[in-house]
Length: 324
Image 1: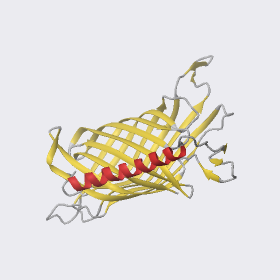
Image 2 (image 1 turned 90 degrees about the vertical axis):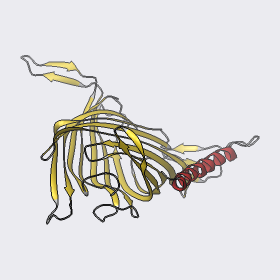
Image 3 (image 1 turned 135 degrees about the horizontal axis):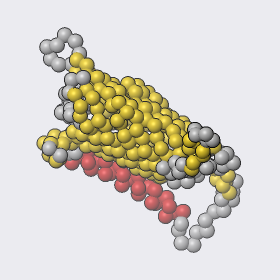
Image 4 (image 1 turned 120 degrees about the horizontal axis):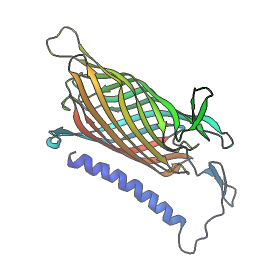
């Protein structure tokens, strides 16, 4: 990342952190008596009768984001100092989720992400489109049982304890448009479907803490538009029950901080390249620092790593997110 974008990104983080620190310091001045608060659900009421939101739900919101992204290519497993690019980006997404009531001994934990989009309008792509990542739908469904078990259909049947939750995740209708200088040999990457059977390693009713091991199918199409060809060239890529993943997410009870991490190992069969193994990893951190008229404004940072036959890069993003 060049010096100016890196300084701008650092300035955004420092300003947001300074605002949050100053607000906390003002609320805890020596000799100042903290106001008595009555907390009911996500709302607080002070001694003067003012009601305001003091807890947030990062799983139920519409987000608008903006910031700066930086990308560097990898050459033989090492960072390439000659292939560093950066640009501003804007993002949008809709998040919906539904958890389990405390009295239920079995239920489904449901999470959905709709219209997740990140776009860098000024960054060049080989296709002439702006560089973007978008996905129409992403869902995660995990069944919680207070006493999970496996039934063995013998005669008579046997019930054996099972220490994990069980569920399924599905992503479909995704589109990646790589930058022209990313080293990618394709102009578009269409994610048709990605579905995994998942084991919930953290048996909890809460949606705020997740650790899942997944395995399943992934199918996507890479579209190239080579010079001199009359029509685009399609490469069909299938991971036939060989796509594996490990996903972790932690969100504080007050909804002010969220940390996620994911790693994927993808043995993929291509109709043009044959078999190959691809690796993807990403991590993110988000912290709510202030709320304007009960709408939280947070700072967000993330990093993504991809190692495929056509793309080997690390992408970092930092910016601000307004939740509606």
